[in-house]
Each structure stands twice: as structure tokens, then as C-alpha cells.
Image (tube, rainbow, N blue to C red; front, side, top):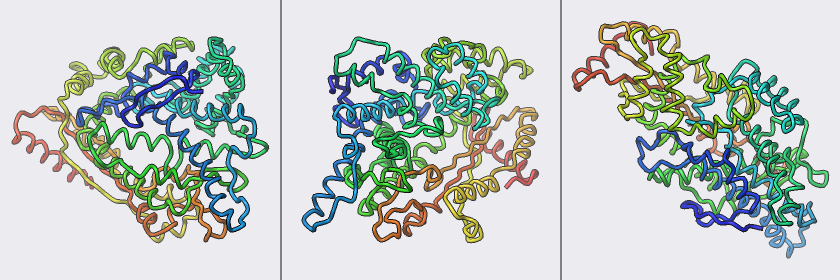
Length: 534
């Protein structure tokens, strides 16, 4: 039963259960108020100050909407065909779960998974993934709290081996698994709930929640209901191509707060087209062919938001400056001295975006960066420039649309082949990294100390297609469903060819006039020509 309320500018009134209220009030979740959804996008779009906190609540709200509508649509479809004597062809989750309390438990697990899908994000969101700890260090930390993580240590070890993360930096998805396990453990230990909530809490399965967020973390576990596998169905609700609750929320939210119109789409039409469907022996989320136009518009809206907002030249300037600040810290970690779980969690609670920039990163640069710089830490100066919004200026820009040609298509037998071909073509068109190093060296060794930083933005027209479990319900197709999204019709094929790559070179503002900037710009072009940089 929902007992609490949150007023959201995007979705209106969002009702929450007391279980969700407990999670939202925990320190490790509340810290998401200090982590912006798009880091420094507010430097370009002043209203874009929204955070991972409200986004997570919005995803939870949409996840239930997708769940409810997809199951309601089963009965609606059956009733429409009943007068023609057609037997029930599709089955809802409710058809398999007869007991009301079990229905409430699985829905609560879904809502918690959606609420906690971003809980592992550190300060600066995706940028922080390059600044965390290695898989081996994470295991050492988890072993300090074996009473909580003991059941899952083997899964962490296997996942780290599978992803080759033992000596490499972990990503926020794995940190999310850590915090989810601890949060639900804390929830189960608390007794200050109504009897109804206590019963649901007792039946909550941590593995179900983890599997809904990241199926790869528990490779030998599936979400089963009455002998049927529903893992793909629940995971598709939270994270899947071509749409999911996560994308639906951030498209609306980022558009709203940025003040642009690119990310809006026909939500009601998409919801009306959803059905749970059995595909290759597993239940997944399917969309009826009648909703295809709405899905196409959704993908287009997302692509336009990327090119016009996320890839805005000034937003990319902030990212290029961050890359420059981190340039000599590849082997450093913000959590290097943290050896136990409590300290690990406290670091995340303490380090919101502002604190990380002004304190943690400053300290790391003072301790490490200045050892490399001869006359002082230029990275520290650049960080000050970034925080003061004295942003670097774009000197060079190249835009390319990479297509998979006919020769490539002969080698493509599935989605993974398609994505691999795209990535190979992307690498061919990138600047030669060795030439870029030479270019930087030549410019920095000049008397005027010209500092530059390259930045790459890439967006596949059908981004996420290789991990998609969502299918199209097409009665004209031989199997009744299909998942070859890039070949469904001409519009999808066109989207599959719309793969944008933007390459930019930014220059530090050591100039005072437009004439001085033009001279620096020409010098960059001259050196690029000498180095045969295309």
C-alpha cells in the first residue's frame, strides 16, 4: 500500500510505499541529491540542475506504469478477440501469480530495482568510473563486511573475472550491486513497519532486484514465476533498447530542465502497445506493430537530444577540460586509501559533485599532479577555470556519419556483428592517438604554452541494440515476434545508418583577442597538416 507522496514536475504526484520511503531516506540514496544528472550541463542550459535523485524516483514510477499497462493490455486484447471466439493468446504476470501478496512482492521488487538502478553513480556520474578502484580492491573492501556480502562474494569474484576488472577500474553498475545488497539487508533488519509491509519485506528477494538491474551479475540465477522465466521481461522494463523506464524519464526530464523540445514523445501510445510475450522459451516485453511509429519517434527524440544537448560544443568543452584535468591521473583513484566497507560508503555519501571538485579532486591534484608539472600544476589551474566557467574554446570540429556498407553487411549475421562493424569503422575515423600526442607536445613546448584537448562524441542511431531483449510482435513474421530491429522497415534501417561521430579540439584561453585566437587556430591546423592528421 502506498502511504507517501512526492510531487514531481515531470510526472505529477508520485505515490510511494513506506518501504520505498525508508530506502529514499537512507543516507546512501539521499546523496544522489548532490549528483547532477548531467554534471555541468547547467553551464549551457541554466535550468539543468536536476539530479540522479529525482530521476531515480521517476524511473520507479514509470517502471510500474509499464508493468501495469503491459499486463492490463493482455486482458484488453483478449476481450477484443473474445467475440470472435479467439482463445487467450497472451498471458500476463498476474495470470501466473494468483496470490495477491506475491503480486505485491514482485511489483515491489521491480519498483525497488528501478529506484536503485543508479545508486552506484559517483560524483560527476559516468566520468567517475575512470577514477574509482579496481575489482581486486573492491573485493578486499567487501570482505570487511562478510556478514552482509558473504552470500554474494562468489558472484562478485566471477563478475570481476568475466569483465577482466581485477586490475582495472570498476564501473558504477557493480557499485550499484554493492549498495543494493547493503540497503535491502538494512531494510530487512528494521522492524519499524506496518504488518503488511513486514510481510512484503520478508518475502523480498535481493537476487530478483539485482537480476532486474544487471542480469550479468547473477549468471546462474533467473527470475521464475510458476516455472516460467521472467528475467528478460523485468530487465526490459528498466533497461533495454529501443525504450525503457530509464530512457523515458531522462528524455522528458532532461528536455524539461534544459528548456528544449527534443526529448518529448508519445508516452500513452507506447504504453498502450505493450504486452508480455514468450520468446525463445523466456518471457520478455513486446510491443505491438501498431505502436511502431511511436517507437521510431522515441528513438529520433533521443538521438536529437544527444546531438543538440549532450553533444553541444560548450558541454563537450567542460568534458574536454575534465579529461585534461585527469590526464596524468590514469593510475590514481579517489578511493585509494579506503580499505573497509564503511569508509567506502562514507566516501560516496560525502562526495557530491561540488565537494568532489572543490576538495577531493583538488587534494589529489596537489598530491600527485604537481609532481609532473614543472612550474606548478596546470591541471589545478584548469580545474579552477572550469569551476569559474572560463571554458576552453573550440578550434577544430569534424562531423561524420558512419555507415555499414554492403561489404560489411555480408559479414553481419546478428546484432553483435552489426555493432562490432560500427565500432571498427569508428576507430578507423578517429585521430591517430600517437599523432595527437605529438600535436599536443609541439603546441605545449611552444613559447606561448598552447594547451589543447581533443574530445570525441559518438552516438549510434540504434544505441543499445546489442543488449536488447525487447521484441516486436509481428503476426506477419514467421515466428510472430522478431528482434532484428535494424531490419524491421526502411525507417529503422535509416536509423541504423545514422551513426554520428563528432571530433573536436579545444584550446585553453591563453589568448585575449579574436586575432590571437585565430593565430593559435591556424597554428593547430598547420601542425595537423604537417603531421598528416585528417
